[in-house]
Length: 429
Image 1 (cartoon, rainbow, N blue to C red):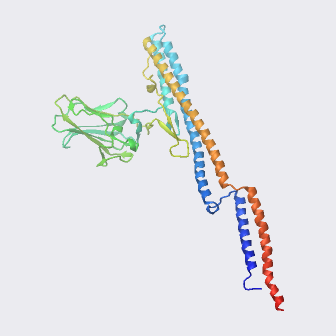
Image 2: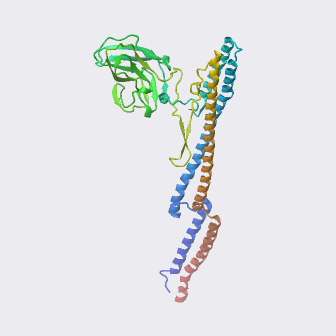
Image 3: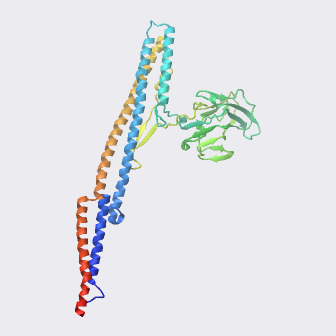
């Protein structure tokens, strides 16, 4: 009999510790409901489940994105519906009425006044139909669609000078509020003849012109500079690849979004070609309202993130429902021949709006199908993730009961093993 090492007691203690550990693990799983509470529980399963969890959460957000997209489409379609009926329908009624030969010119004038009011209403609907700041019905494909103008002051100046910079040929300061579509600035008289090329510059003063960086360019502010009677006739836009003066320092490339109080310049090389110099024209391409802070900057597309991955997108193409785009901006009903012509234009506008409403209806149906698919995908993925990470409560309860019974038995056997060496005392007596 040996008393220095009680192997039986050590064995019982080891079993007791293992059973207590198993009991603790079972309690942890039962209390959390999870089979995997830490990487040690199942390293591979944890990695798989976390990837699934990322996709599940991505799908949840995608479903919310799709719902927002559906709301956007519904907003656009409702605006088009209001334009079509009653406004376009009423326009057609008025045009039919004006085409009747029994009406006088005064009668048609009254009809024209109502037509003009309806056209203003259509433009108001198109300009004010927006979703979260996104204009839906006044999207234009013109190059000016990236321009935003803020903090407008009064003075903007244009200077034309010789290449050497010694002689200023012409200079004028004007109000930016006067620059609207179709209005341009020009020199009132030919300058003196010069052997040097002519250059021009535009001083923005304290005005801020803000454009999207990827479309920044001198051409976003000025459509064209034309010189009649000179060689090197220029009608172009100067983009960011050309030399632009920024804060007095030559800059090549895409500058910051905000250009505040700095000069923009270009060197078009206007040389005297022996012709008659009639004018230099600088035409601005965007309507500028000094009381307004923004101009539409829509590209015409809204991209909806409809899935958990980067490429899971759906494109919604917006439209322009203003009277100019519908082809009814210039309709007139006097004389009756023009009223008949107006009827045809209004019919075309009604067809255009119907086509756009159908397009937005198809967008909504498609997004709803995508939403249903994303929802089903998320449910199935969640079920798969549950089978990996969630605990089987019945099984874990069975394991807990087993561990508790074994722990109690180990405790009893440990007590017996500790008592066994005491029999040596009886032997020594």
